[in-house]
Image 1 (cartoon, helix red, strand yellow):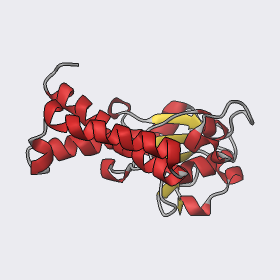
Image 2: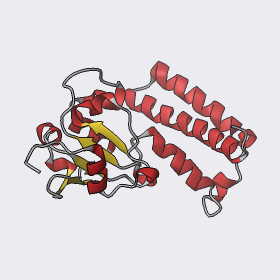
Image 3: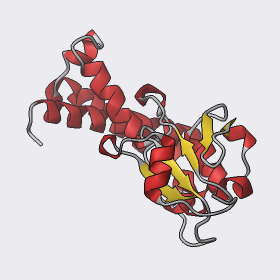
Length: 191
């Protein structure tokens, strides 16, 4: 195949060694700022894509495609260029290089997926596992109720009087409470 030629998605999936039944994500490089994706799944970054367009707020509003990737993965995260099978780290790639080729970004381990909301659910499930944290395993909706209220009040205080760092910390604490309550309900097959 000549340099720069497009390969079919099936060819790229095979080249990356992915099993579709196990799940993966595919996004055009220039479209990364507009797409929410889960770093705990393999990510195929396809060459090109439309310039500009919508950008998601928050972590995605940091700039170009590489800024989005660096917000979610460590700079030392190894990635593979699919055209020549070379391995690089995210720190070594520019937006232009990313858009010029097809790449495989391997998944993060669930416990390393801390910049994504998907990571919190994996962490709470791990804490509640039979060999998880004894304190977390004995909690219920009722035993966590005081902490939920406390975190909500701390968030209100951070909104009214805190710094952006305080707000981020308290949002994270309240989000953990929400995730834990959802984990309890899922374990009991309530929803």
